[in-house]
Image 1 (tube, rainbow over the protein chains, first blue to last red):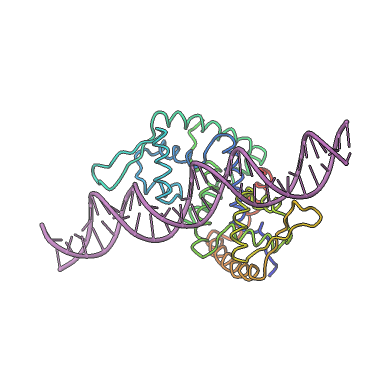
Image 2 (cartoon, each protein chain N blue to C red; image 1 turned 30 degrees about the vertical axis):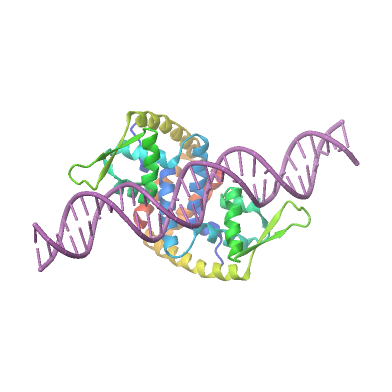
Amino acid sequence: MAERSLNDHLSHLLAQANRHLSRQLTAEGVSLDQWRLMKVLSEAGGLPMGKLAEELALNLPTLTKLVDRMVQDALVYRVPDPADRRKVRMFLSDKGAAMLASQNKRVEEHEAKVEGSYGNEDAQRLKTMLESFIKQIV
Amino acid sequence: MAERSLNDHLSHLLAQANRHLSRQLTAEGVSLDQWRLMKVLSEAGGLPMGKLAEELALNLPTLTKLVDRMVQDALVYRVPDPADRRKVRMFLSDKGAAMLASQNKRVEEHEAKVEGSYGNEDAQRLKTMLESFIKQIV
DNA sequence: TATATATAGTTTCCGATTAAACAATTGCTC
DNA sequence: GAGCAATTGTTTAATCGGAAACTATATATA
């Protein structure tokens, strides 16, 4: 068997692609995790912390503190679940919704640029493949 | 234009895929960045810090500290460049090479499992697409 | 060749992440 | 329903990460 180079390894390629994209978004003023969290809540408000952590592949302590900061900034808020008082349900505030809207725009502009130069059809195929890959490995 | 879900966003899909894979490797006893660093050095020993940071998409201060730890563990070593004394050239030690060999095995076993269940041909296509995507966005 | 500018890395300071321990609540079993 | 295990989330202590400042060396310009 021939020696495999780093570029033949999915783990390396995913790390590289993720970091470059995430950095570019940071440069556009978008924190990837904060944006993803707000976006999940805009799609499914009232998620408990555990589900949120799953959806974002964050572990719970990290999420707790991310949420702490975003509560400080009044982007999201906690509501204790009356039916199960261990649970906390998370919601997007109006301020969060406004922030999300502006960041959506930046993310979509950036992705349009990136995907355009990569080729829109290929980009679509790449996303489809990643989506099913993620389902496999979770 | 219809509302786009998180799963239509490349940045989200890459973050998810990367985190899941990276966690699974951590569980197998492989630190993704350390492994990637050792692997780069095994392919191109003597790289200066700046080139190394580029290859791994790490920023320089982060790399300095990663290297500090790995020097502590005697996995890699620094050699000042005599021709340009600002530069430091990095090399893999024998211990590092042994560690790399054992981690290569784990990574390859893990990827074989993951890629097998995803479909080997699709996995190959995914890697090819990611590789050209990365070239585009860098 | 003296001075300015650019390059390569490291250090510092602060914020973020993790694993482990903890607290609170719920569900199960006898 | 009393006691025990499981679930949900937070806190703590230690490590890690990033932006900005700093050091050392090299190059360009006058």
